[in-house]
Image (cartoon, rainbow, N blue to C red):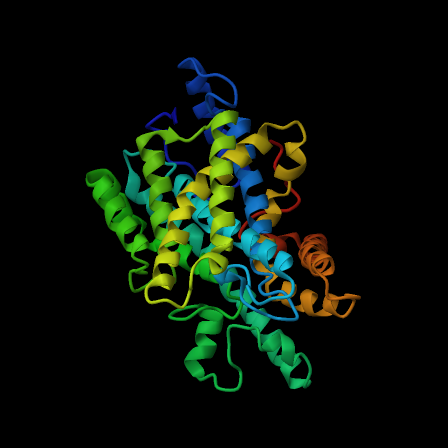
Length: 418
């Protein structure tokens, strides 16, 4: 752990753009160096902190693209249970499941970073700062959620009207044959059910967490550990607090905020990072192997496995954060960090795009072998990312303002210079 300044200074503008983060980080870095801090492995400074966050955004969202690839054809057995013991392609099934479990830590780490950034204001006048941040998140989180899901819904309805795309529409988070009015409302707004582009459950839960930030602030100031225990208990028990889709978001958001206000930032060294990553990879491989080791249909087995899977995530958060720190320290890290402004757009567009790409590329697989199935897996993710990036560039060239809105307020023309 590295001690951070406990009072970051006066309230900054509510928009989490690069200039604001850099200004804040330089201020913190200067104080850290005056206190005797050192380079990346020892104390945070402006470029290190900014670059690490941008690297994390890019790598974690790409991880979510892998995660949302879903089941490998032709068996279409869910990788969420682990390797398919009955599959003739166990290697491909195992790799798919292991990568999925590895990136289960993406949402917790992104939530932690969001909590850290959200509470980056002075403590003398918190309420105006909270109001500004809440208003800003309407523009940067909820408004893009509504527009993207409306576009996806219209596109899917148009595709369905042509009589084509049945294989794609069956994978969507909306049963078009039996959907009532509320199902369509949720498909766009995500009020009580998942949006049609289901990856936006995270954006919806993050926005709801922001709306509850005044309650979090009171807890952080007056009963910080009680709040952490209460949210952590709900998360461990898989209770989603009635209004959330998953308790991961508010719990890890709170932990990020707690770390911020207590003045701590994990900065594991190379040795500690290697140890935590090795531990996490071992846990991931063990979890992916679970169907070969235990009877998943035995009474209580599924609940215990779900609990074990959740328990892995804090280890994964530390492991992935350590990896991002290591990548940010590399000379070539700027090539990754400069695409941080593309991360939200990729998150928004990658599904159902990857489902369509997956179906299209399946027609090109010459043989159903482990090697070709894994090639299809990797190619589907790569093509999805490239198509999304091409769309981002095209929209930004035609209408920079539109792209900035669709990307949650991040301008692709102003990449990180960290």
